[in-house]
Image (cartoon, rainbow, N blue to C red):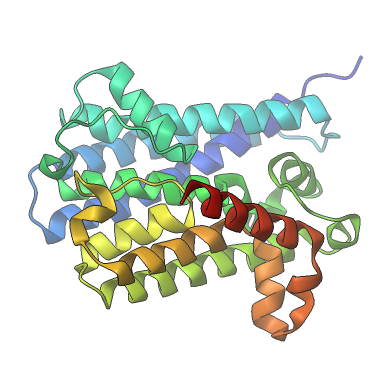
Length: 291
C-alpha cells in the first residue's frame, strides 16, 4: 500500500497560510492609515500565521521525495486549507478583543471565507476600520478561492498543482485543462482583480468614500454581502450605488475564464455559452418574481 504523502499536505497548507499572513499585513496598513490602536492585533496575527505556515512548509519540504499525489490527499488538503484559514482568520478579531468570543469570531471568519454573508456583529459601525477591511478581505479571498489565487506560485509542486486545481475549480472543460494550469489560474486572478478595481472606482465615484468603496467592492464581486454599515447599502440611499453593486454581484457569479475571454476578444461568444444563458435567465426570472 502506498504511503500517505503528508509532505504535500503540509507544504501546501503552509504556503497558503504564509500568503494569508500577507493579507493580514495589508489590513494592518489600513489600521496605520486610520491610526487605530487595534492594528497590533493584525500584526501579531500575521506573525503567528506566517510562522505557523513556515513551520508546516519546512516540515513538508524537508527531505521531500517526488511522490504521486492521490485524490484523497488532494481533497484532504483542500478541506484542511479552508479550515486552517478560517481558524487563523479569527486571530485579528480575538487578539484585539473586537469579538471576544471564539465561537463568534470563528463564525465571522467562516462566513467570510465561504462568502456566506451572515454575521454575529450587532453594532457594525463601531467596529475598527482595519478589522472591517480584514472582514471584507476574507470574503474577497473566498470569492476567488485561495487555492485558485495562489496556483501561479505552485510550479514548485510540479504536476500536483493540476490536482489541487481540479479539486477547487468548477466549470472547467477538458479542453481548458489541456492548457497550463498556471496560465488558467493567472487569467482568472487577473479577471477577478480587474473587476474588483473597476468596482472600487465606480463605487468611489458615487457617495462612498475610498474605504467603503474598497470594502464593498471586495464583498460585492465575491457575492458575499458584508457591509461596513448597519443598514448595509440602504445607508447610502443611492440608486447609482445599488446598480453598480448589482453589476458586480452579477459579474461575480459568472465563470471568470468566460469573462477573461470576453474582455480579451470582445466577441459575442459569451451569449452562446449555455451556462451563462441559464444563469442570466434564472437571475432575471427570479428577480422579476420577487420584485
